[in-house]
Image (cartoon, rainbow, N blue to C red; front, top):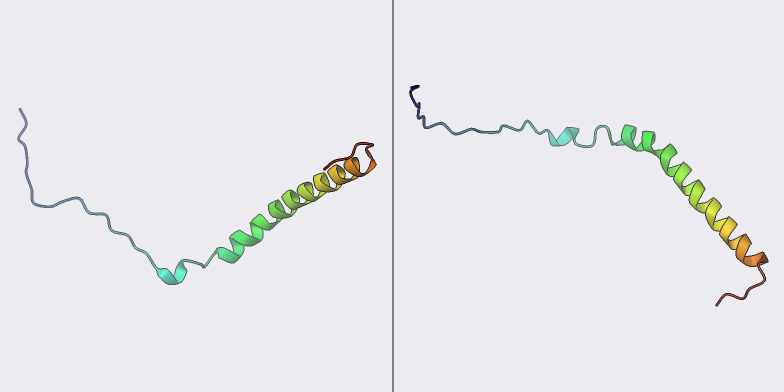
Length: 63
């Protein structure tokens, strides 16, 4: 059988966190996601206009 080795050291997690770098790439990420935002907003606006035109020219009264 193997020997069980008991030590006093516990497993530690060291995080190298630099607060000055937290928002370093925010402009890059925001800039790269803006086309997706524009496309989504365009679809939403388009469907809203189509829905409004459909309701404007349909014969029913909507309350």
